[in-house]
Image 1 (tube, rainbow, N blue to C red):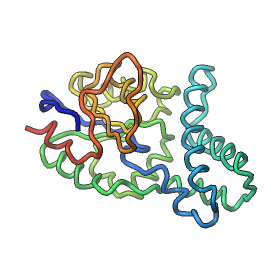
Image 2: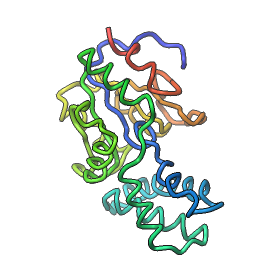
Image 3: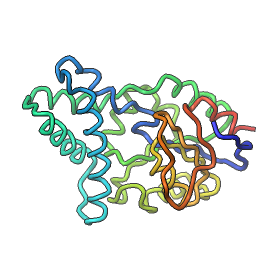
Length: 229
């Protein structure tokens, strides 16, 4: 974790979903034997294309829900790997609706809620995808809100997405602690004016973008100590 004083004046902790709360590689992991030797590359390509397509669609003003973006990205990954299996494709997309959450998530959310902190998810995910993931992980009762870009029809890091958290939770941007495992998302949230904790689960290099997170951690475990009095 980067050296940092406790983040003062935080009224809400807002979490990115995919890669931060939920393990995006667990979908392929669940069907690793069927995907075969290309499993790791398929999972990595699926994720990278999923992100690329959100950015490109935002720039092209060609909105489509994240569920469709996710399917398009999977089709690219399977095609690149030379895999033609409709049943596997269907099962992988189903698995993405019930991704495994990281082991510390429930305990951290419980600690935050026990300390009086408001909590929410703010994600590129389609609402039905997020509802399914939250229900599967059993964290719905631990969240005050689950916010989807469906409501603004543009993807992160567009500022309209981050503004959703302020509008729905009734807090100023300086009172939001935003958490993401995606370096580009952390930078986008910092530019918007959130206090940002980058959950660098994958040992990424920091992005060369205008604004940086306040704190870098490897998991969510240090969060309660950072934001609770």
